[in-house]
Length: 330
Image (cartoon, rainbow, N blue to C red):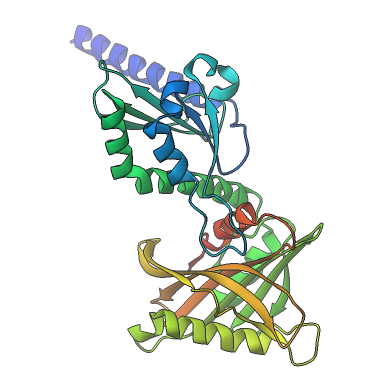
């Protein structure tokens, strides 16, 4: 009996030791480095210049939708295998390619391999043709995985650095949860329309949160959402010139995406805004709309950017991370 107890104790000690090692490893990982929305591509120079490299450049280089100027989805930093040292191993997003007869056709995904929070994707294939075929099949999934990793990092940062006064006011008065980071203030607060603002340098970021009673599923059509958006913006977001107001730019199609957010049906809109009857102002916006079952209302969290003469991809990704923190009391 004592031997059995001893064996159990030893097994328990080994389990605890293993768990501690894993925890210690996680704790000592350095923070990721590198530019947001960038990917280190580890690949041989020969493959980089071939169809295998071309297909990656084409996929990551696609223009981000609903921006006033062309900007790629992701920035690529090409690194040959021989140069992939500890400096590059700390980058936020890493895509490693292994092409040769010794490799199976396979894709693996790892988190926090050399740094945290890090995403490492490895694509293996026996030859360039097989690699190209595999990447083409999974290109959209790989790209979205990297973009989601960037959004998750920002959301984690904003949850840690939330402007508490804003968070508490939204929760107590409107029963809405959203993580707006330090710097955001409540610029307007009516019964059903809230405007959060953040201005720095020559950049204006804004978050609109608005809600209204739910009647039927037709309220989730793009046409209904845009009509409601324009009506509320005309009422609550005036321009500097009398009679001017913010509105959806209808000369550029609004991108529509149906998705699941927090286990609920949601609709995302991406487009451009402009000032009606006012100054030549405009920029991108992105919105997330959901149904609040408990309060029988539709809630939209929307972010917009005004940054004339500047790239806007990373700014839009910042406001995305805020609106995707949207939640409400169940």
